[in-house]
Length: 266
Length: 275
Image 1 (cartoon, rainbow over the protein chains, first blue to last red):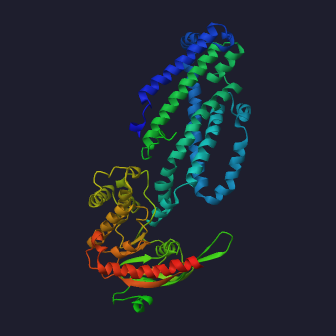
Image 2: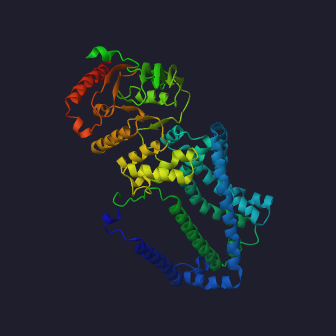
Image 3: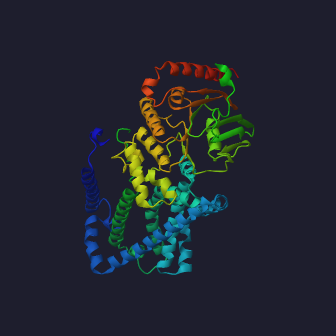
């Protein structure tokens, strides 16, 4: 009920406020560093990062490293999502199988998966593969659990009604269970976006010859904090873009859901 | 008055019955393992094109009865025959309209109406045409592309009904379909059902706990006892058709029948409170 929410700024106003807030935080950082309250040698400062970014770019490395990290994260996201959905449907639809296997997956989920990063580098080498596998493993669990939960919470009334309309098992899966799981799958992918980047970066820390994680790790060892911060800035932008794309997909796929609006309830 | 109604005759006319229900019994296992008998011994029949309402105290097993008759549940004892043949599992001849909203929320009204035909493999153009025709008849034109959340309760119910009509079932089961609607919407829906039934006569079994609704719509009313249910009485509704819900309730025949059924039901509710 937008009309009744007096004092709630519109979307464009929200963007202006958001950007202003970001700039204010940057200004505070800049001032703290310039006035010597924090040491820019360790903390860097926005003006230094702005100076470093074009240099990083002109050395020809920025795009290359970003592309490598993006490729790892996106491949990880894609593979993890596909496997997550497929395994969730397999275990969700074959109930007995699900009951047997699901506790195993939960147990494996309990292992801190980043602890596996060094061994993945050992097994799959210094190239992209070990990072893609790391990233997809992180994504897999998020998508799997979310999708599995979605399959298990399909509306019983709808299932009965469609069964009474004469639907076959296959039709029920395609026309009821799959579409009703879409919001759950998307929730898993939303978590997976961040996880895929974490998987790629941490994989690169453990052993790589390129990628933003590798740049961060090597720049840190040379105390090039400005370069580290440049990389983090790029990851920040990548994160924003990822989320914008997902939001767009969600709007497209979930237009059948009533818009949530909590204004006035808080 | 009680003489004929106390002993429901399975078939009043000479036409062979559509449904014959004989000695139906059913029990559920309650929490803790004890068995709760829901249907004690139900026998009745439904003639072709008859509109039969089933009324009973809440929780008496009306829905269980309908679930068995639709093939969703197998009876533990007794049998249901449809056109003389034993009912086995779900059949496309029966359309089932339930109390709860069973529209697919991710489909538009039109796509929901098309669902049944889609499941049967009706070509897209044909099912779209038929669905649009039903949308028009249900006075939903302009809302065919709306999602269920964008429709009012009455509109959703109408979509739910034409979704079943789209499959053209010869028999329609309705399980308290209007229980969740407000009184005005409910009356509108009753008028809608009457006009539908008038236009294309089908065999209808209608479950409700609303006496007014039962009398307004049906040809015959079966009264069930409290759980475990038996058919307690049967009342013929001799009101002429076509009927108008708003006018009916002041008709002396209506009032008289209402009173008689009320007394039947009253006994059931009171006995329950004593036990």
